[in-house]
Image (cartoon, rainbow, N blue to C red; front, side, top):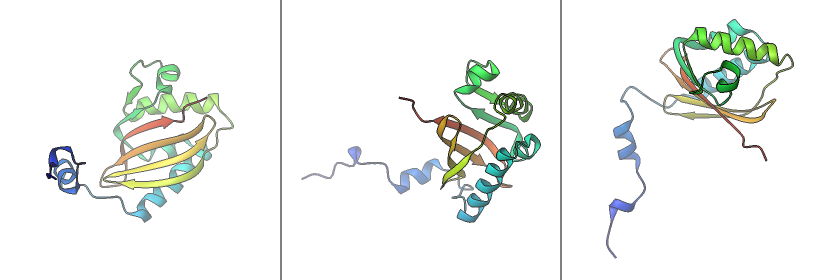
Length: 144
């Protein structure tokens, strides 16, 4: 039996080589606080409170950007673009309500799994050192 390491799964040493040295796992209490405030801001339909979580140059990706914002890439850049997108979305969905299902932590990231009007969503947030979102990707449950 030979030890063929070329076919083994990537390990912690290899992962560490790809993660910037200043990035660490988000502390559970920070992730929980972020999740609670983010969900509360959305459920209050308070656009400025929602946007307070994001940096000015944030990037956001969602399959619904295409139909709501008319951006074929599905990506938006900047808080002003998010403001316009979410203002339209909140106006379209006056009864919008999110229920937090899970909070997950990663290296420099928090993932919130929540239920919204379209079903289950997993949204991955990359946070900077001050706890503000620099990028976010929303993934939706497959229908049918």
